[in-house]
Amino acid sequence: MSRTTGWIVVLALLSGTGARQSRQATLASRWSAQVSAEHPHPEYPRPQMVRAEWLNLNGRWDYAIRPKEEERPESFDGRILVPFPVESSLSGVQESVGPEQRLWYRRRLEIPAAWMQRRILLHFGAVDWETMVWVNGHFVGEHRGGYDAFSFDITSALERSGSQEILLAVWDPTDAGYQPRGKQVRNPRGIWYTPTTGIWQTVWLEPVPTVSIERVKIVPDIRAGAFNVTVHTRGSASDHRVRVSVRDGANAAGQASGTAGRPVVVKVPSPRMWSPDSPFLYDMDVELMKGAAVVDRVTGYAGLRRISVCSDAGGRLRLCLNDKPVFQFGPLDQGFWPDGLYAAPTDEALRYDIEVTRRLGFNMARKHVKIEPERWYYWCDRLGLLVWQDMPSGDRSIGKDAADIQRVAQSARQFELELQRAIDRLHNHPCIVMWVPFNEGWGQYDTARIAEWIKAYDPTRLVDSASGWADRGAGDVRDVHSYPGPEAPPLEDRRAAVLGEFGGLGLPVSGHTWQAEKNWGYRSFKTRDELTEAYLQLIDKLVPLIEGGLAAAVYTQTTDVEIEVNGLMTYDRAMIKMDAERISAANRRVYGAIPPAQASLKR
Image 1 (cartoon, rainbow, N blue to C red):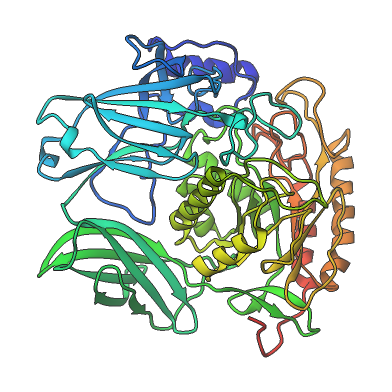
Image 2 (cartoon, rainbow, N blue to C red):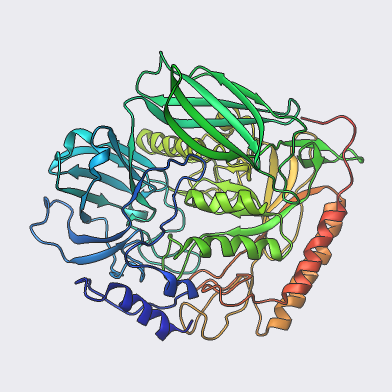
């Protein structure tokens, strides 16, 4: 899609809505043309805990940008397309909102009459960063955090019938604050990108009974061939029980009952493992029961897999999946879009990035200082892509050899709160095998304590305590960065050696860049053939490192992002910039360079 076509699409989406278009879209992906102004992102947003009844609130909302200290606006500036950030072209607004301003949203709707005898939950997938919510003039709650889902029970604020009003006020300091924010800055440049303010994931309503299922935690146990399922409820469930049923396609595979708040063990016969080569997923039904009656029911899925560190036949530490050494190799994935910024245009677009990653021969992606909507992880689960999940960075940075920063108490509390919420939200996705709390010293503090806390809180996954730069001897891996590289850290007897970033080979492609000139890459090339040859040379150097003990590697990066042109694809995803067949064949060589495991596993 050309620049002009992309802009026409954005105008068409919001024509007649009163929205202001402040400047032209710089670049658009082909999925811009598929975005519905009435029902963008219509998919149920929480694929591991699905209810049959719900109401998607994505679409046109009123918006206003006002000074931070002002109260509710008397009038609104126009219409914004939710869930696209106000700074994005797909929002129809494309305006900056600074820390001295507040972004307001308003939506009027009617709730199905059949729902009014139940509790009504208002869900937000993510809003960046501080959110206050009113319903029909009643304050229902506030939330701080730009990446985690949150909900409010709005039942008591609803009118008995007729139109209902939802009002939001959002404040986001971006890089003027200490909060986790990733690569967002007020002055984009180089490796720093346009910020996201406000709603950027799906908003929806859901009716639930007075006592309902609030969260389901699934812990796979491959050695027992079982799932340990803990059901947390909203409201007192002392006189309720839970029933968990697991299916293998159309066939029942296991069922067990128990008490809410305690693990229910569901064994499956002839258990099937989840892996990139065979991403098998069991379907799962979770029911909350009172006597013989089913009070609440959610459906989802689960994968049986185990991640660990083990020794290969030569005694070198490896990352093992299901007790077998697997070299983990994939791109650094930043999750930015030229038309939607933090929000992909469509679910198909989310899936496409993962499909291309697999097509190019990678089995892993490192999700870099961003947490995605749950449907991104759903597609990783379905398509078999391992994920290293970064915590979004924030606060101050340190140099390569400097000591950890000393965060003020408020900053530390917020970081740890958002970290815990991220682990809770994403816990059930089998694709995630590594948590990465710190990157290149950015916001790095109390490294050993944070790593130990994560291991204790989620013992089912590994921890890369500090990707690149300031290693403190903590976690399960020793991680170095090298551009263009590759290189390997010294081997240890306790932690596996990984290359957390390398490559960064750049090629600007005319007509597919964020700006026409002055694009940036770690190394720059002029043609597709030159870029391909340079990449193949990196792989030639990587294979001996794997044979010598390197357990994983992350290539920078999946796509170009704004003026950074280091991507395997252009920013608009219109082109794979290298010869796909040649790099796919080269990438698959790396998996054969790792020896098998020893009989006894390290841990």
